[in-house]
Image (tube, rainbow, N blue to C red; front, side, top):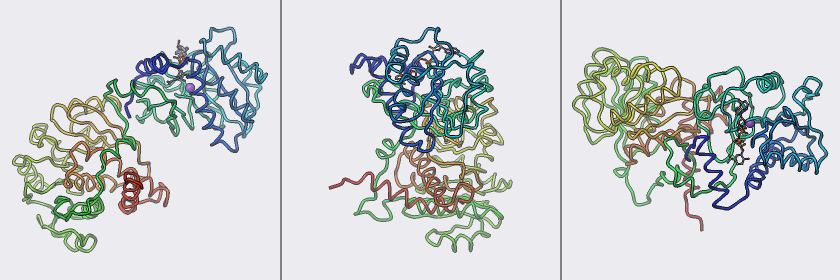
Length: 505
Ligand SMILES: NC(=O)C1=CN([C@@H]2O[C@H](COP(=O)(O)OP(=O)(O)OC[C@H]3O[C@@H](n4cnc5c(N)ncnc54)[C@H](O)[C@@H]3O)[C@@H](O)[C@H]2O)[C@H](O)CC1
Ligand SMILES: [K+]
């Protein structure tokens, strides 16, 4: 799914209005029906809604939603800043409809102090949406701060008011703090970054049937990985196939005290479907690996750390989990890197060893996949002020080095050598534990070995990892789920994928 800027979204609205064609007031009605439907389906306890409306079209949506909720049996009150202010045309039409149908009295922001926000009341924020042009000030700032102090459930329509959609947030002290954001048609970029994402709560994207023609024809540099994209990438196992069909994985991982990382990466490669899986690890990991992963074959690369990177080019190598940065490992690894021309998956200590000297970057084979977390990224490419700047630097580096960068974060970003970005939306905070990255390396190496392109490997691999984590958190909770549980849920994800892509009779 493409991510459009606020400006492109406005053009998308206009395109839909003139090409469908549909009157703008009807488009607002469609958007509001989607919101009111979501609220009435999901809010069974909170039967009272207090809707705060601005005077643009976001406010218009709020006023229409208030009418619809009233008709669905909710108790509803509407607050506006000042009825004498200039409202957008469609907001005015909805104000009149609200009055005609419900007789709901419209309150002013200054009435908040005397208002009874009981525990059945939900607060709906329809102050500003994609039309926000500056930080909130004056009455708007005050009302948002007053509402943020309330314990009631908070729902934002389209965008939490005060949050810009396309650029990093500057003024953090006046953004509506939503528990849920019901946003129209597509993700907004800021929702996917940690600095701003904390204001959205859980995001639901509501389909309001904006023009498909526009979405297909207008280019976007940023995308969200959705089910549609995954289904187009995933290749079900062929019946007339054999282990040779699914490639050879070589996990190069582990050192004394960190053999567990090699186990996790190897198991993940196996559970993702590689034909043959080998692990190059130090001898101290021999029994551990052979016992915990009997399906994999073992190569010894040293005693307590790897010092011999002797690998065939017909293997797909994932290097880094638990490898350590012993000088002998480093020397051998950098020598190997200089002479190897096939794309690699590089993670953890492999990246740390490369980052010791920026001259090492040029030895990375083109089309390799680098999987740094923010700290590893900083060591590789330098410090940035925020996650927006980090992503832009990653785009530059991916283009310069002709590599894929998997920038691990709450919403991991995949950057291809053209600088295009794919945000992942599967996964959860249960993955914020040692070992989660080792699993991703195993999954990616396995997919690349099986013949997926580098780009498809990154997109499918990151999505699979997050999806398996979502299944694991449902079973065990985000707190208790372990990376091992994530590996064990890969099977459930493949089952779902197979079911989805099967041709039904
Ligand atoms: N396809 C869709 O997504 C649809 C969206 N709809 C809704 O329309 C809004 C966007 O409406 P718009 O009138 O363009 O802007 P806002 O309501 O967000 O803002 C109104 C107005 O306020 C002024 N303004 C901006 N920033 C500030 C500020 N800090 N303080 C005071 N005033 C400010 C500015 O002049 C704005 O124009 C979108 O989010 C959806 O909710 C449609 O209903 C249907 C389809
Ligand atoms: K809003």
